[in-house]
Image (cartoon, rainbow, N blue to C red):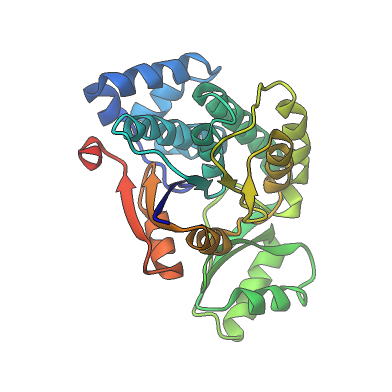
Length: 301
């Protein structure tokens, strides 16, 4: 029953120089990165290795950068003979999970991520939206209280039992933060993000993405992916396409995802990619699961 899962982080984990150590010191990593870089119509290598904070923070760069680094690390981990029984990713990390599971080639997974990033960047610029992290309150209570706020504001990232991210119109977010603190939230802080990701305001990005999905050669996977919006297993192309469309303006059910992995017999999770954000979240969801971070060459040794 001791099963392994690979999980991949989302936006906010990026940093300048990400992946550079791998590129300069490992032949396999260099080859894999070069394949990815040459398949894109943006200069991702420059942005990742020596770009400015501002460039890297732009959603259309951030998303493919995180997924590219995650998938190269995944290749290096597999070269050690470690293979997952399940995969999952947080928000844009789901696109790394798609590549890991084999639904798409590594290059196509990053290319699709790049298109997602562009679509989200375009839509974010047109809607006046924001996000906020609510800490120290049960998600059910947050969902109920948000119903009393006028305007669009939704619970979108269920990160751990007492940390939920909300997204929506800027004014509604500000009013929600005040209300939630008055009703017992320990903290309610607006996030420095460029859009109301995973909220219904992003549906136009989902519509753009839906069209793009037809241009990719997906195939069914042997390794189940636990989807963000349903927290259930996905192995077929049809289910995956539904998930990718819905995920662009739907929730990230991370708490349910980790609990379902545990129920499926997962005892060890490798967090693959920049940062250690998921490690912290997973420990707050289930202390028994062993979490191993893979971010640098020394982690692989």
